[in-house]
Image (cartoon, rainbow, N blue to C red):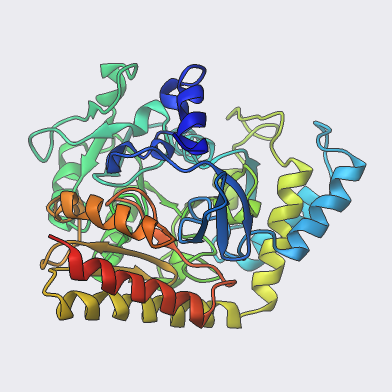
Amino acid sequence: MNKSSAYFERSKGVMPGGVNSPARAFSSVDMDPPFIERGEGAYIYDEEGNKYLDFVGSWGPLILGHGDEDVVKGLEEVIKKGTSFGAPTKIEMEMAELMVDSLPNVEMVRMVNSGTEATMSALRLAKAFTGRSKIVKFEGNYHGHSDSLLIKAGSGALTHGVPDSLGVPEEIGRNTLTANYNDLDNLKAIFEANKEEIAAVIIEPVAGNMGVISMTEEFARGLRALTKEHGIILIYDEVMSGFRVSFQGAQSLYPGIAPDLICYGKIIGGGLPVGAFGGRKDIMSMLGPIGPVYQAGTLSGNPLAMRAGFETLNKLGKNPEFYKKLEAMAEKLEQGILQAGERHRIPVTVNRVGAMISLFFTDQSVRDFNGANAADQQRFKTYFKAMLEEGIYLPPSQFEALFLNVQMTEEDLNQAISAIDRVFSELP
């Protein structure tokens, strides 16, 4: 038994499933996870010393790669002064100013500690603002693990949600309606059946937990028009896509469409725990201490997370060529996958938005959860294991996005594409 497997066995005695987040258990690919010892640039190293080209990047935050010198230097400066005060600090103000100055449609922002906190708080705010109790989410969109968002669709288009996890009361499900992604007719029917009851619609404009799937232009415009018509708050969940698909996030991909609230996470913490939500000033002003909606957190705006996030966003904002590099690399990877599939007669579809990318073992286009779920998941397991043996660290699930970072080189991409070609040549 190697070190990672031994550590995993020890961990299972003291942590449920041996992990602190289910995806880390590698259960979807039927293997033990490698335990990571360190990261450097575009690579990570496990406890055995194996080196992997990292396309997970801590599930998205590490757009600058591991150990970026500016982020590390900033953290070293902060940690000498103190890690937490539970009091206002200059860096959280500067971070908020940077986000408000950089992001269209964000007039005020509130820092929290995770994406789950951000979406949960934004929905509470929307309910308070509208005086309504129901929300609409989309099948295949993941917004964290708060009760009202762990809901899947029922058997019919207008069926109330059924809890996706034990411990979520059924009455919560009655106030969560699940719609089909990129399906305006379905959304119209839900709105008509629940007139003046829906407070908010929350959506990932670029989804990353059913593979990478984005809103069509037609759907995005129809969604905004319908929510305005019915007086419903539109919330974009950009925890994954924010500052990833472009500096201004996914909202910049749909010009002229302004969501009311937007949720952020991942990149804005530079690899540290973080979340944020922001948007229209009239809505955000309902938050305490100036409004009646209570939301608080001892570590919200933590100086370490704020400094890491500030250094990351500041560097991205000053180097627009980073996004051009990421786009070019991601396009090269996409073409490499498609060409390998054609060469070895492997049905494969690639979805990509900026530096978020995923492949599906299917010859059909994938525009929603049903399309993603129809892909060959057994073939994905075989592919994943073989790629790991090739030294390529991918998300261990058909339904997760992979992420590129600016430390990756042409040589790294060529290594990955060559590995894909070899693995495809042997896939059953």
